Image (cartoon, rainbow, N blue to C red; front, side):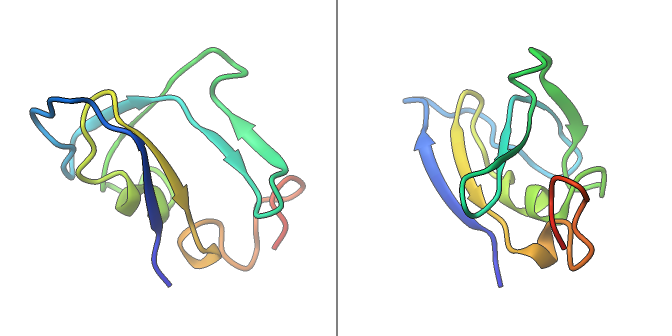
Length: 95
């Protein structure tokens, strides 16, 4: 299965799009399929910083955040095999 990418907001002008190796700074909210939240950078008021495409995050992020514009907002639906897999991340993300 693949990551489902929904663009919620895209700026009128998009200069550079995100590529592998770029350092991204972003806010995120993670929910399970039933809508139960499991993590959010917003509640900590601290954006998350990582290098795209280098394995620092789950595969679904490395794939689903490629080609983003600065200021764009996306909704990613990530299948388990591109997220936390069969083992999950207990206690918040079941396997």
